[in-house]
Length: 247
Image: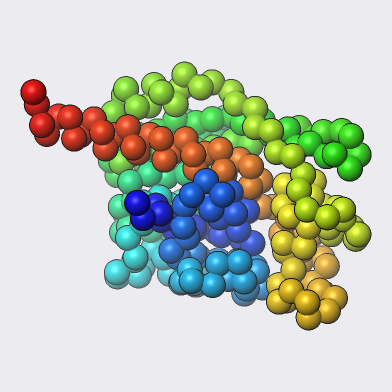
């Protein structure tokens, strides 16, 4: 079976993309206005198409078809709402995954109903475990998960999960710099945000890397959501198949 595809709005350095890829999804395109962050994203997924900023995604006539649109809208951008709606309306993906801020997901779910999406908000907790230090850090994440033409039965399957706690053990070599420590604390492999090709020497952009990691979606959150959405889409497909072939 071909990998399910997604497009990423406000892609950043790709925390959501990393988690979704671990869950079996494949990025087809991404929108990010910052050229340095787009370069980091492109280093990890060179086959994905960079389409510019989110405004471009909302205006592209033939936005490549994807199964899922994932978005991490910045709180400081008051215009994100219009651009994201435009991109979703053009691409018409089967599902949406947004980082919506704690306890705001349900409000966004209501707003997307006019485009034919039904969804629910989640408050997730992520336990990041560190074998290096023998401790753990818990961080919160607010999500919106929505399906196009979603049925109440499918939504109830999400609601029944309640508040989830995702365990994310640290991986990779021990960090050697402050940036690498922050990467590990945020759930990224050590060295992930370095924009230069591996083995080419010391990576610059220390300040940019620190900011980007702090703002990125925790990959463990996106991985959990990606697996849940894949299950829901499979359930929806099976239910439609059964309805089309009555006994």
